Length: 139
Image 1: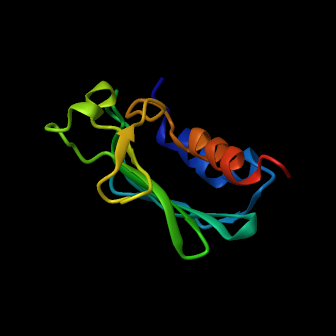
Image 2: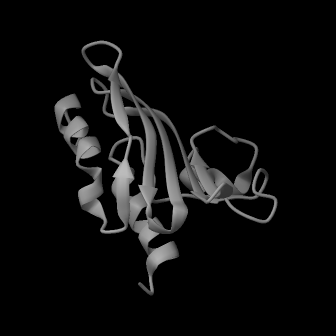
């Protein structure tokens, strides 16, 4: 179900409540009209883990996330990222087209399907859970 701009704004500004490992967030919603907005900023976790978020949003549409980029860093080293850039000629990504994840080795060109991501529901809760599992499972 598509959230209202106010509902999504509430999620963004309470994002630290989704994980005990989040230290702080400078993620903001930047309105670009009554129904258009951009979400931008970083979510800072313990152990120098950071999620950089960029989303283009249109709350009038069923596919309300129009595009995104999510990058996970440990210190200044990029660990992996998700983006919605289309790769129609890569058959390995067709099952979740255009959603995919860039992973090592050769992070720029090594892409795998990302079935957890969507244009129709908030991606941030999944991304935070993934970071918790990957970087904080034993804590």
